[in-house]
Length: 282
Image (cartoon, rainbow, N blue to C red; front, side, top):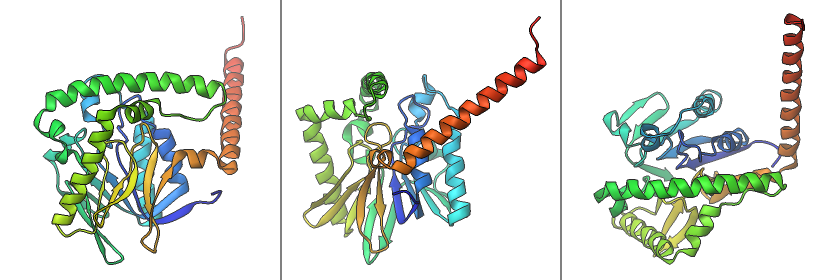
């Protein structure tokens, strides 16, 4: 995986730009190594909930959108942005299309004779839809869990260990969460079948998956807070999940990291040198 891989389609969701838990640097690196004809940003790309409270918009968040524009310019990539529950402020402007960029509520994706219903998935979550205050309360607890996860992984990095999603492990152990995920997958697949779709592509629950429910393909792209995953489709119409951890194992990427560190060290050295020249000690 040392060279760039070009795909027919890439689906990404739940980046939560504006939050401290967003792994946007890793996502940028992933998209530099994985390009596509169609990029579907399936909701919660921007976290309006957190930005209205204590979230912060940083340069790296802007850098993500600059990269998306570069993909549009260099690879003629079509970008489909679907709103999620955390970026529901987009309801005020959608639907809107200009050039190869579209901002929509949901989308019908057709490939190799198959039709997929693409939607973030929050509209099928009764808690998020009907009891928004409960969802916001749960968001506080989830944010705290991600804060613990961040500090836990900082310690792992210092010990030379790879990223591990503590929050995903907690969810996997909670019976009610497992039951909710299963029901969510089944309900979405049932809806897709009622609408005569061959499959459904979603996000929302931060649980990457490719499954089959009664002949309907269920595809969930996961997220870029915990699982760091994306759905990719090749030109034969085959879908697979790609994880950032796979990219981390790439020797080329490790070499790239070393080169970046050397460049940064060189810049700092030059900066210190120029500073000392202009401001000699008294």
